[in-house]
Image (tube, rainbow, N blue to C red; front, side, top):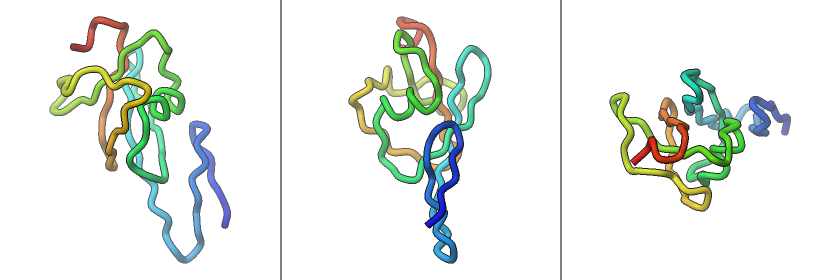
Length: 95
């Protein structure tokens, strides 16, 4: 099995098996960062680490461009699917 790395996450690429890659977008400081995972759920800490979210920032899911569900803690498990969007913002901005 070969592996590809993108944003520091190893994503297996089993030839002939079409391993599934889940790509999410994390907005940090007004810029979108594409992050890839090979499984779901992932922890809030996994998303933060892969996207480079500062430890002092809050993280939330975006739906329709609006924050939803409140802050995602590092220990929270988050179900993700291709195309999901998240926002990292200074503490207190996400409610």
